Image (tube, rainbow, N blue to C red; front, side, top):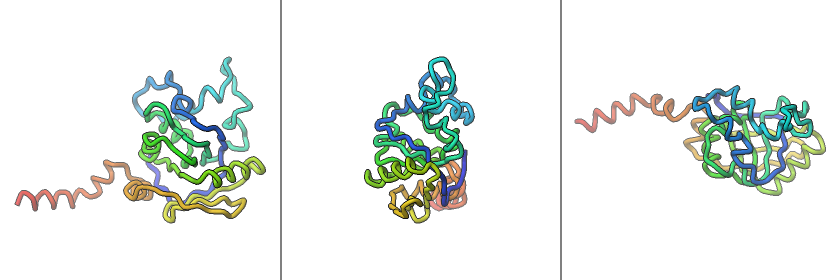
Length: 200
């Protein structure tokens, strides 16, 4: 889903688990589709944690908690998105409606997959991450603001902020809702002018 991103304020889905891998994000048996059907993959996000063995909802899993139904920020433990490089994991996150994932460390390939699917991965320090989890536990209505232009994330419950890093090209694409093809076609006239100059 191509969505520009500037500033987002939302409640947060807390997932205080480390080493969440891509098979937990989207189990392999749901990867038969090779086309991106956002609703399909979003419906199967964390499927084995969201459901009991009989297929019923697991009331103890956070995505089944009504308090977080409209949250668009996922706060996860260290080493999020490890395991296989499947892009379907990022499709599932985006398809569910999550715009930001916050962690103290991301697997590199998954981090790039999120960026390519207009989900912003925000790397914060361990103390800041732990503070977020504590704030959300104390009050599920805790709001967090992510500001891409200034590259800051703010815990509204404490007023504490941190800056985060992002590749300048990916930042530009997110701010303007561009994928790689859109970026190239936007500069089509410049490319044509360069080719004409090279050809002499």
